[in-house]
Length: 476
Ligand SMILES: Cc1cc2nc3c(=O)[nH]c(=O)nc-3n(C[C@H](O)[C@H](O)[C@H](O)COP(=O)(O)OP(=O)(O)OC[C@H]3O[C@@H](n4cnc5c(N)ncnc54)[C@H](O)[C@@H]3O)c2cc1C
Image (cartoon, rainbow, N blue to C red):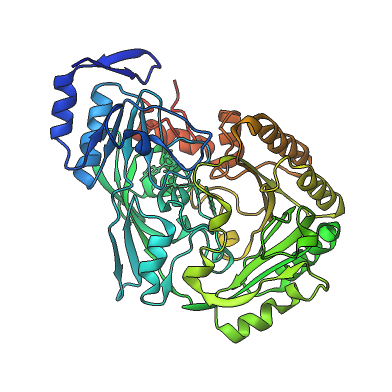
């Protein structure tokens, strides 16, 4: 038996002896993994293959008591700590080199309350799992657009998906959350209980504690919905983005389109003569009655001469998976984002030029059309901040080969740097790159809410135990 090497919250090397680890292990109902254990290698890996961290310990929590014990252990030993929900944050903050990973992925409880039209889900649930349960009753809450991602990171930082213009962000639909704070307390956060904490967790990420469960409002959606998925030649990007913009201005809020620019993948679904050539695509679903959906979405399909039109009615749970296969586990990913104020010709031209230049055929530039219900929530009502900006750009570098890391990361950075001149600031912390801009990125995202978030951090986590995240630093 040898002591376990760890990294402390001050970044120093230290050790934990066997007796200390054994005592911690016996305080948990779930497993405690360390290097050398059979499943350790798998358990330390997350979705983004660029992240290759070796935690000292991984606590696979199966309930709230495990989470409380893990937080107390990390605090008492000043151990660097990370929190894992669905393990899909591109920055890789779900794992810490030499630290303790508090892994909520075994916590999968979900319960729909039909009379209240709400659902409660534990911190390890994925979007697909939650949709599966709520759709059994023909209900849904607004989530993101890839079913394998976690509800925890999504909700704590906002949550943009196909229902955003109709029902708002995921975080706008939180009724309450159970939270374990840095001092090991278990609190409920809602409009009536700990309302300051409730304000902070709706956009402020994992800064204030570990959310062991989330309670969301539900709405009738599906079970079948109409989906528009049409690709036009990339040389028509200006026309496509411009048309979609005009369309959104008058479209019912049941539609929340996503436009994206890229190069046609070499798959059978698309005509061979288009493989590798640039496209401008529109993807949207209609969150309402099928026939009406087909009618409302038709104009997006009528621009003429598409490369492919894959639009069709489908079950809502399938629509929520439509992009899943574009994001395999273990590939390399680096994503940035930027709010922009207009989608004029120059913006569209620059976006298409960047999309054409991408080193990888799998990379895309996404345009999230905002507004509607998500735009009606005031900037100060939740930590998320300003909703007034009409478009969010998501710049996604997605590639397979590790030797191509540098060129792909450089492409995304160059693209976002170029697009900043079309922005008055603001970005989305669920697409944060590797957080290399530090506090500048965080301040830019929160705008006027930043100082209030710092004060809240000081109240709930003055020693910054929860630091492996889009970190709001307490005053030093
Ligand atoms: C393929 C893909 C598609 C995506 N699509 C969308 C989309 O459509 N819309 C959108 O808005 N976003 C989208 N995202 C972004 C995604 O929502 C974020 O990456 C989110 O952080 C993922 O949550 P997670 O629980 O899987 O992350 P994790 O990596 O497990 O966690 C990320 C961070 O969240 C915090 N955290 C996690 N769990 C908890 C908890 N229980 N309590 C407290 N803090 C916690 C921690 O700080 C952790 O470092 C997408 C991401 C991917 C990879």
